[in-house]
Length: 181
Image: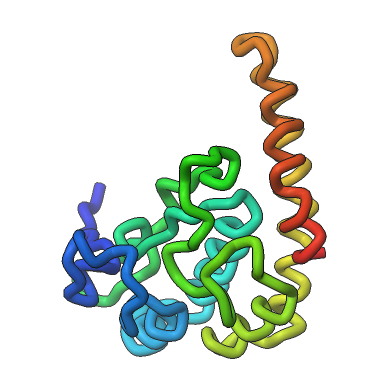
C-alpha cells in the first residue's frame, strides 16, 4: 500500500476556506486546467476527468462545486493527479440552496442560465476539443439518467420510495439534460 498526499484546490491555490465561493481567478476552470497541464503526470486524462466532473456537477444540479470539493493527489516524486470526484450532490432539488454554482461555467454562474455554448467555451478554457466536449455531454446525459433510474430501482427493496426519488431527480435534471443533449 502506498500513501499519497492530498490537497484540495483551495489549499493548492492558497485560497482561504472563507473565500471558497468567491469568484477568484484561481477558481476558474482555466486556472485548474493550467495547473493540470503544468504539473500533472497525466494531463490529458486529468483534463478529461475535469470535463466529466464539470458536466456531472451541472447535470445533477451540484451548485456546491467550490475549490474545496476538488483535490489533487501527489505521488512520491511530487507529480500530481486530479483526485477522484467527491462531495457531489443535487443542490437544485432543494429550494433553500443557491442556484449559483461554485465556479463559472462558460459565461455564467447561474445554473439555470447555462447553455450548450457555455460547454463549448469550457472546452476552449480547458484545452479540450469542442467535438470531444459535445460527445462527452451527450453520452453523460444518457448514462447518468440511466444510472439514476437503475439505482432507484435497485434501492427500492431496502429504501421504500427510492424509485420515486430517482424519478424526481431525473425530473429536476430535465432542463439540464436538454442543454447537454
